[in-house]
Image 1 (tube, one colour):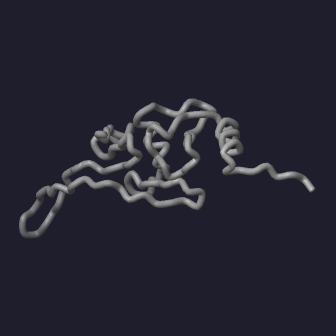
Image 2 (cartoon, rainbow, N blue to C red):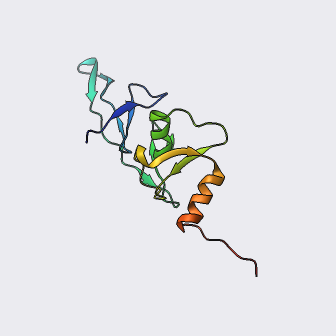
Image 3 (cartoon, helix red, strand yellow):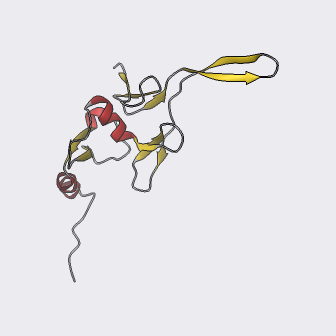
Length: 128
């Protein structure tokens, strides 16, 4: 299966997301000023970004300095489009670090909670 890469909206030419749930930076040139050579540029190769893990299990990457975003939101934005009002990104298999496009969709908060209760990842608390 071939991994499909697309530019992340708002970061075209800088970052890309794949349908397999990965995010990468793109090859780019940076300006250098040295005393010996004066002004020049250098090619910085792109790379797969290493995600950080949150306590809830979701993973994030930084798109630029101080701009950490959830990988599932980036993948949905890139391949499906902006999140509809009142909805959020859902993981169909209830595994928060599985960010493959086939495992993601937009849905309501109540739909997300209902799926969690049905799956057993959340339990009902009964009053004593």
